[in-house]
Length: 348
Image (cartoon, rainbow, N blue to C red; front, side):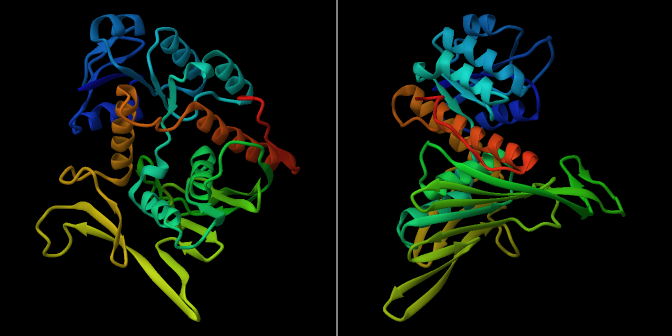
């Protein structure tokens, strides 16, 4: 059994310890909080007390951006591996300071879970299989900032390095029927900002970032994902490719979701297939978890395996820093109406 403690008590912190209760080999032994309170796990008012009394194998940080570097640094000073909530530092200067302090330790991972969500994991598997040849462009319109950049980089297979960013913003009226808190029952549109950016990774690889305020929750805006390759294209849940000379084939990605109609197995994700090939199989059958929960459970399991020396690093700090640097460049380019190129000096 691999154990962890979480720093924080918000909704994201709660998700980590709640999901750990459904995992076989990972357990949350407590939460570090600023003031005593009753939570679903034991609480400690300092990391020192938590380490002394609960002896976690790793730490999960789920604190505000500004507080994250300090918590990460204290954990690394204690030799404790860290899974840091995104982003690990609030700005470029903070990322540089954090990398200077802990980058060489190899103890810090970033809790970037989007590529582990079932739909995205299936799409990534399809791209890796070579069905559409070499991926050359990824377009994402669903989530924002570092999460979108992670999807673009991951589906492209782009590593860490300079990225040239061009971006613009526009504002238009949009009804906002849903937020994280639920239905708003609003009748009148409000101004909503859309940010569109192009990302040039070099070598013929590029990305398109398209995000409108509250697009995660506002169901009046479709989520879109496109991966263009040298031999075909993946659009959302469909692949088009040249299967043989003069033979174009379009094949859907099909999710088997139990619990519909007369399926009495209960609501759950089973598999995602492309023709006769299984691209993704839910590692947690019977948990009835959402895609977000499956992704975070997968990340916790992967982090525990890495801590035990039984698996690769799930998402190293350098990758999380790269995502956030590009996201910051998008904001800068959109706000100043100029082209911005990210640097590599953080890990140089």
